[in-house]
Image (tube, rainbow, N blue to C red; front, side, top):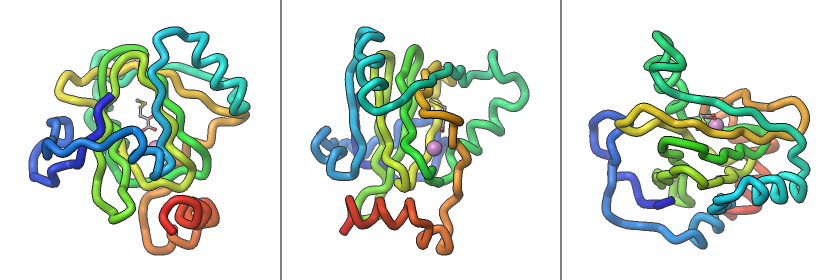
Length: 172
Ligand code: KMT
Ligand code: NI
């Protein structure tokens, strides 16, 4: 895992967009983003039990797996959105970038690879992209029914109760 400020330059979303300025895991924690390095799946079982995540599935994002819809999917993952539940991803293979908004509404890029697990809190604005290798496999953890509907950023969404809870817990 490496977290750094996004450079905001034009160019493919899958390029590193590396400003060269890093963030620490404690800085991520202040945004409510939790990071774990879990080389053994037992670590995931423990975390899932503690947080009440009973269910899991696996997703592969690649042109081989997705065919013609790959480019479309990658673009849609990159639209800025939030969820009304945590987003937990445990990377099993390949690499990818999760971008999250900072306190000052700047993009922080989090590069993840195999054995990295990330918890994005409900209500945080974020987006995802594969990198130039166009391949990631991830385990998705969820409680009951997955609540993965992305709610795209808008002024109206700022009054959403999950957004407001996030703002009052982490940005106030
Ligand atoms: C998401 O929510 O953006 C995804 O699940 C992307 C694929 S998981 C690495
Ligand atoms: Ni999401």
